[in-house]
Length: 108
Image (cartoon, rainbow, N blue to C red; front, side, top):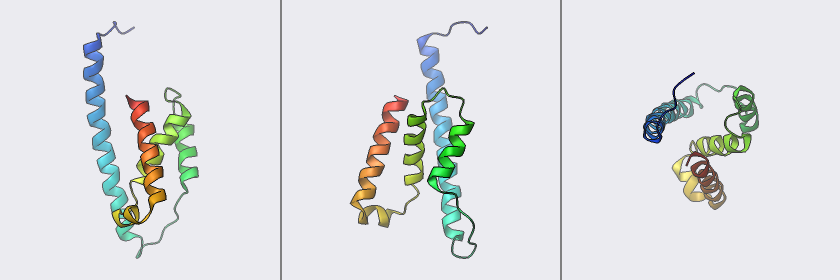
């Protein structure tokens, strides 16, 4: 059994994990951007957001509530929309803002 860690140690661990999450999110964004650039020349089957979320939920350990998981990945998937579409769609902006707020509350 692991000895009890101090609050400071736990905060340090969270900061390290946050940096790791950031690195992974940036790597994901690069891969998503690459897929978008290839989409016209290399069409491929794309899973729906619902299918992708179902697969993630099935793989989850349960430490994160499913509603939280859905909010976080909705915000991540929404970020792939091009900036021109974001500016043109008030509905998209509201949905992205809502998902981002949920994610922020969950990870606080």
